[in-house]
Structures are given as structure tokens and as C-alpha cells.
Image (cartoon, rainbow, N blue to C red; front, top):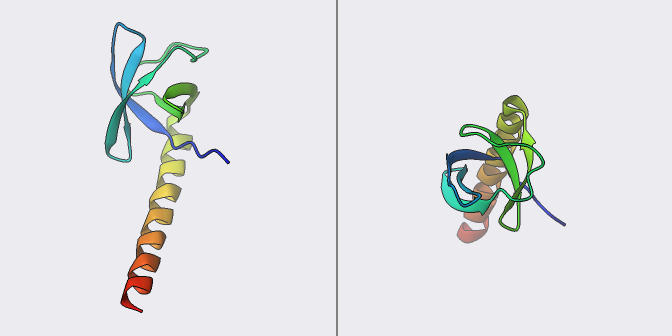
Length: 84
């Protein structure tokens, strides 16, 4: 199974890479597999270090909200199991 979380492009470099922000974590990814140009502020899906698809901002933000809810629930469950 593959899980791709929308990431926001925050910097673009001359070497075909970009710095993206994924839920507050920044990392450098390759843009070489992108079928269309990418600009700062765009949302992309990342797979094994490559941006593979551009997303509509509204769609990306909805997905990020869901991921944040999942993380919150997982943290609650961890707290439950730790106190048991």
C-alpha cells in the first residue's frame, strides 16, 4: 500500500528539485517525474522522493485536514494504551 500526503512547494531549485512542506516537515524532492510545470505554492503528491502529481489547493487542504484528524486520533489511542 502506498500513502501519499499532499505537500506544498516552498522553494524550487535549478537542479530539478524542490523543497516541500508536508504537515510542517520540510524535505527536498525531485521534480523530474512531473508531467507539468510546478510553481512555488503548488501542492504535489510525493512518492519515494519524487513529486508525481499536482493537486488542486482545495483538494489538498481537505486531504491534509483528514490526515491531521487521523494523527490526532492515533495520538489519543496511544495515550489510552500507555495509561492502561
